Amino acid sequence: MMRLDNLPVYSLTKIAWAMFDAHGDNAFDIANKTIIELENDGFNGAADAWRSVKTLIEDVSLGRIGRASPIIH
Image 1 (cartoon, rainbow, N blue to C red):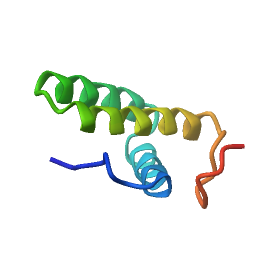
Image 2 (image 1 turned 90 degrees about the vertical axis):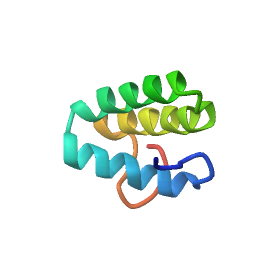
Image 3 (image 1 turned 45 degrees about the vertical axis):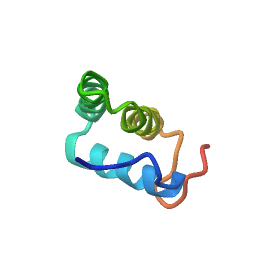
Image 4 (image 1 turned 180 degrees about the vertical axis):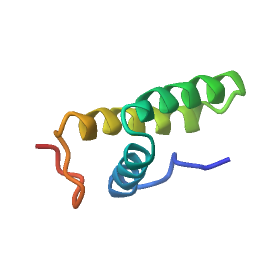
């Protein structure tokens, strides 16, 4: 299982962009399903990290966050 709970914002942003590049608009739904599965398995810290990724995916898809930096526009 991928651990995201100790990664800096820049790394989470890169993950969000990679997911958006690979899955487009479905990336948000994939992140949401991942959160649910992690919670069901008792991995609440990892689920919290994926919530951050899901938020960043939304920012990416709406053009509020740039690819080169974690600065929200």
